[in-house]
Length: 184
Image (tube, rainbow, N blue to C red; front, side, top):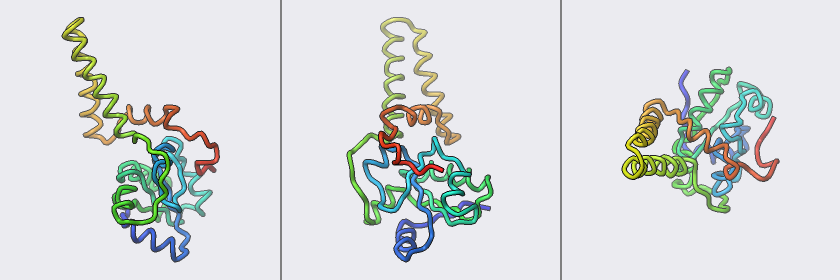
């Protein structure tokens, strides 16, 4: 069974018509707080539990639309749900970026730096530090840059980034409101 893809406009229309469609945002609380849809429930991927989703949404057969920034994390959440027995899971095409481009209603809050940009900042800083330390202190520090480069290649090939998972768990990416997340 393949993961369905649904346009932001179709999700919005179905919600406006009163359909029992659960729209779940799997971004970090910081990303969600900077811009979100009025009807999406926040369940960050790092606390995403299929049984909680099924309990809150009406079971494994309930229609569930998942979104993140661009679609990658939502696809990962959809794969988790389908492996757990979900039969009606969709990924919102283009994620929050696609929703905004479609001109659909959004709630804007305090701006934050997304996890993908944070990964680029940290990885770039580590690679730069490794290069500078290799030139100025000891050539062995070149391995730091090589390690970061290898990690980025692995993340690109597998779509799995341990650095992004680690960064998403940092305090500045967590919600200060204990009720902000949809929990089971």
